[in-house]
Image (tube, rainbow, N blue to C red):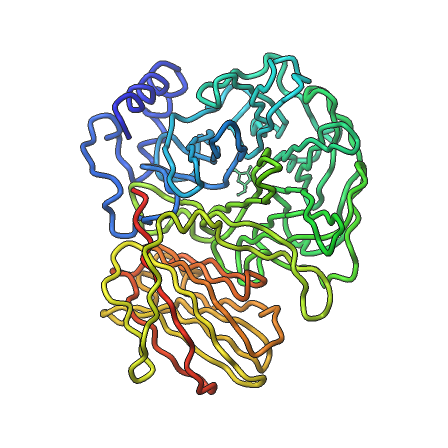
Length: 512
Ligand code: FRU
């Protein structure tokens, strides 16, 4: 972090009584001692520090918030503790990028106030000045987590560098005083009805509200009674996607716990939205999940991506509430997945599925692809230091299976099995490196393959702290954290399928 930024942090931390209070009290609770100002640490050299995934220089991060594209910049705000590497004092951190790959961390955007901590939320660009803050104001709609959860707004007229909180906050309070879970507003402009629409997590349902000015909100409808409902719903996002020449609406709903492989996960629904009500297609076998790995949570999509681009772009928090506070990274904790483009593809059984693809901008950091040659069922990746991408094309006959073990010299490994006998895609990180910090970490995670063909292609991004695997254009996906001492640098094959896959590898240059 540069000096200007450090000074901004310094002013923001020391001036408010709140900051001083935090320094004297809770900060001493966590394992990062109060060395914030005089520390001469060289960040980004830590063993498990990702090379190409977003992580803050220091301290705790969870959900991505306020993702919006504006005037050449992708903004990524996020749940952030400005005082240490454990959850608490929730504020909005902020980073910007021109390509979603190289990120510049800026000063935190929103700090707690008398209404509470700043929980998750979204940002829109008020092109017609509907709220009266100014044309093109960047308006943040977030949850204040105080005595109760309420929705508040703040605006920026300088591309998100500074925010002013609206003086009449909160703008939305629940009409049910017993409702404790009332949070994570995601707002978009609904062109057909000419109004703003908010999706809000309301205990085990999503409630939709509308507004003409972002200040007064009217309840539209409530969506519930479908999917995984064992626990509280969080971080919704409703958006349209094209599918076979029609517009379909996708509703993302995160839930914790309740994920298919334990802990936190994001389910989704596909259907229609008429400006008032979201109706899910019942041909889809809910619950279905955007990612069956353990570490892709609370992901939502960027607002205001230009129509000329047209992509629906998403990023998730790459962790899981089961162990997020215990992962063996002490200077920072938490980070984001690779940014992905979301599309709808067709499941072999005929219904639509959400597919995730690495954004094409990843090629900016990609070296040339090389085709690896196998010797005794082993492919060596050569010298890999930062991170790399693998494209693997396989032919796996019905009833057969193929296992690919990514391994380093220490024998630490991450195992991927494609099993065509039951069309599953299984990962095993039991020997992936440091797994001892939580009993929930050493996991085997199973996903549906969502493919019924002998031709299986995997696209894999391996960074220092994670493995992201996409099957056949991302119709099935797993994101998993790993903590090996060194990057895995070979692929070892086994399984009943004897044909040898084609494996291409390219190095991805560090974005640090
Ligand atoms: C999801 C979540 C949100 C909440 C935020 C608090 O991970 O629990 O519902 O706004 O984290 O940090």
